[in-house]
Length: 250
Image (cartoon, rainbow, N blue to C red; front, side, top):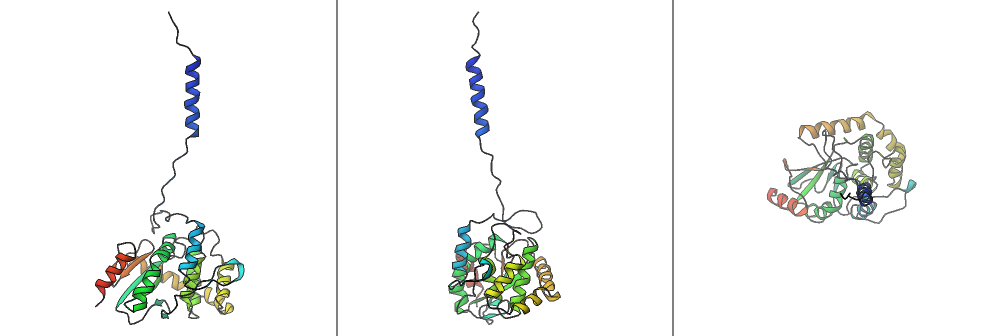
């Protein structure tokens, strides 16, 4: 009676085991940043996207600032008044809810905001009203406080652009540390003493708290959320937004 050779069978087992060891683990798919569900944001964006944001959001030439932070500026030629960007008398209002640490907010700022600025905001058809919805972590709260403090000196939208130009690749990873926020304020030419006092004020804390309360009352559970004349924008991309604005305009 013949016997099946053992050696080839062992080789096959070893080869199969080695192939299993070489297999790469599957990567988890990251979901959009949503409040209260525990999901993570779209994912860390590549460093190149931050550089693109510094070009597309800033609408001006970057200047040297302390602590290696990039400097932003409000879009040239667009009126600003507090947290409003655009003609205050514009017939269409876009309520914009954002968290400065949200990668999806940064992506919106690079892909949609420039076209919206060149067209509807420049034409006076629409205006943006910013609302803070700081829920990702402590640096979200601190960035919102920085926005409030800059607004006390009439420079909110400059700080808005600067914060997104400096968004980190990791949430709560130090991009919006107090030292860096102070450096951003200095780079914008703000009165740093007044900035620090406003940042630490009870009014700044109330601004953050009231923003979260307003967002939840409006049913906002993710960022960025746009509400166009009271109706939540459910589309994506500039073309869809422009269509909604055109329909809402008188």
